[in-house]
Length: 441
Image (tube, rainbow, N blue to C red; front, side, top):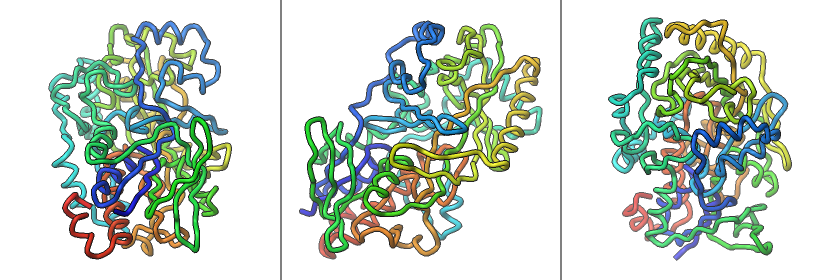
């Protein structure tokens, strides 16, 4: 049986591993450790925030073990670490966001249908919204903003509305990529954690494996197929170290939360991003910003007394991933979108009785990095960039043509499913393709 190495265990990597295992003997390499959720309760997080010990954002892993935070000139950049990748610290949104891919001629209807059959996606959480969420939804309707309940990946009807979506769902309700990883492992795939991939090894124009750094040593692992799905920051770094030049088009979907003090609001115990307002290249959504609560002195009120509205924009890109740093910046268009969104967020809060002059903002952060090896009309059919060896594929947000400004996980899963099929078609002998199709490749 041919072998495949999948780098990364998040939305893209876990999906590819699940799709390929059976047709290939799959090994998943994950730089982080097995996932650990935040065990601190609300009061403990509040005490830690008041202590001012988290002077360096990188120390946030003390409170939120699966979250990694870096700093650029304009903002913090957040991503997940460990099995499941960023899906474990995301809010479980199941929003389809493939318009840019469809414009290139990439039709993912079949893949989205497969996801719908495998992963519950619903808005059943709406039945148990807290009063604060209902007031915000009504205010958005009154402003003519056409709010829509956010589809959630997981058993939304069983949601406890504990507010810990990004801290780690303690009830196993929220879907994350470990579910797909478990399926792959059940069918024979192996997962190696704490294994950082330095670069892809090539011989004669083909990828023959990867060079890794583990807890004890460096070693080379060989494979017939290599799929990089280390995320929008990890994948381009590996490609650059492997001699593949990526584009200076990194986007990060900047997020700014506008908040106010509202006694006994209890948004901190609500499902995150329960509904979404879509505008031109940005969205608004109710959101308790645990990042700002831990790091920003302006958020030193008791968590139950804070209400926030997130502004998430589709940025212009223009950043890049370097060996030891991420470079990204806000353009004038980005700043205008943020200002427009923040003004509308204050108007939305005012619709619930909040004095707009009393609002305060959170820490600007980016959370959906991608776009440095973007798909084009030329690569839409094969999903394979000509700069890559023929048996090296990418299966994460690195492929997005531009910033989505929307939660990307569902679309990454769909795209990764298609990439897995394309890779199998290209790398398996013709007589093996039938067995591949039987497992969904």
